[in-house]
Image (cartoon, rainbow, N blue to C red; front, side, top):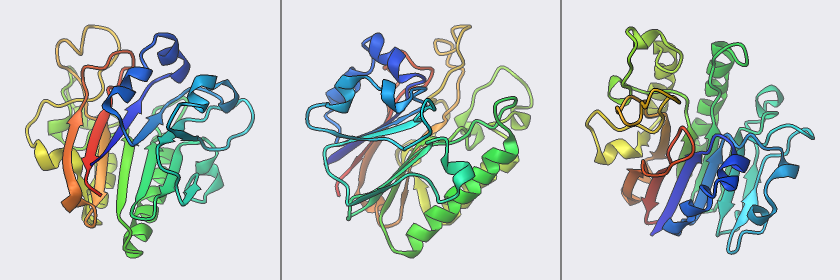
Length: 256
């Protein structure tokens, strides 16, 4: 049984300084996929670069820029790619694609799509490149596991909002939700929904207003698996007890 954890930490150095990062390893994961590090590679805490039993991989970016994703793995990958091969989309360090021979693991921090730092058009273009990559891996008959912060609440069961017209907000628009629909149509399954169909499971809560306590949030963090992997999925959970980030970790157990 292999355990994979995905977590948007909303600032790696802050989580480490608060001693709220290392407890994630108590689950003895084979792989840990991190998003939104807000940390340049040269400022990643040194203890993480030499974490006992794990190798660390991070996308190359221009000096001083954030490496927005990290991969910790007990197993040396056959190869690692950083991005989709489109420079304008790859320069932010949002993508790690690690080939472990029996399967491919994609760790992705999808753009938020909110101005002034981003646009919805950029987010949708990023999704198009991602969908093309996922389809190519399917065509090659590879087993694929995709995880990360997708920045989209896929259905109405994945969002609880105080505001009306949630479908008009970035993160819940029809245009964005159709991108995840396309992923599912390509043969990928939302691993959490294999086991949990009901409303009320969230992975992100806006800061302030005690919204987590009031259970007002969104499910933005996912594992998707394609058909070769789905029969080996044993469990998928939301680790809502972890504090620190505005996101909580999600966990997948597979018997590959």
